Every structure is written in structure tokens, then in C-alpha cells.
Length: 124
Image (cartoon, rainbow, N blue to C red; front, top):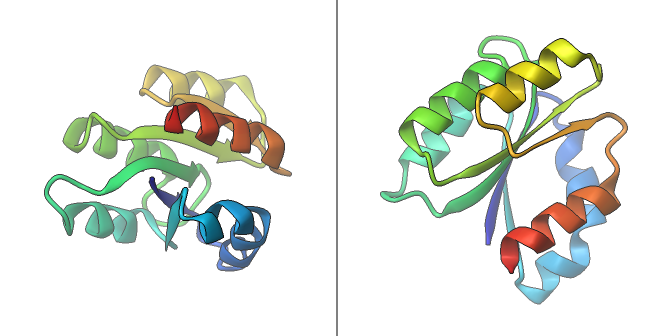
């Protein structure tokens, strides 16, 4: 399963690769990284249909926010499951994300065991 991680903080890539190294090594998942909403849309548009099955996006990013990205992805690629993450667990962001079609909402610091369960459920 190909997963797209979208976050403007580039060190997130190393963190995710460390936390999911077993799944990546076994070939269960393949991770692709975008550092902006527009870069994420470019990656998704490269394949028709997109190979990405799951997108995990930060909400607070410069330029296109994660919520704007979520709306565009759900409009253009409705079959892609999307979960959102925010450093702020406020109900306003949560409600907007869920109303816009997010499958799940995580807060920072990321609970990687919960995220691992989310991905495992998608694989089954």
C-alpha cells in the first residue's frame, strides 16, 4: 500500500521511516513524502488512478492548508483515505476535518501505535 505523508517539516520523513521501518522493509507499505499541499496534488496527479491509497496530512502548513488539501483530494480522488494531524487538538479543526471527509484526526505528538493500527485496518 502506498502512503503519502504531507508535512512542511522535512524531518518528519526520517521520523516516519524510522517508526515504520519494519513495514517498509517487508514491502507491506511504501511511503512517499510531500512538503506542501501543491506538491501532494502533483504526486497524486502523476498516476491515473493514483497509486496512493492513504494520505496523512498536517493541517497547519504555509500556502495550502491541510484542510484545503483534504477538500481537493476528496473532490478529485474520492477513493483515497485521508487522516489529518494537528499540533492543536481543537474541536474546530477536528470538526472541519471530519466534515470534509477525513477518516481520522491525530494530534501531535503522533501516537504511532494508533497510526499503525489505522494503516493495518486499511490493509485488511
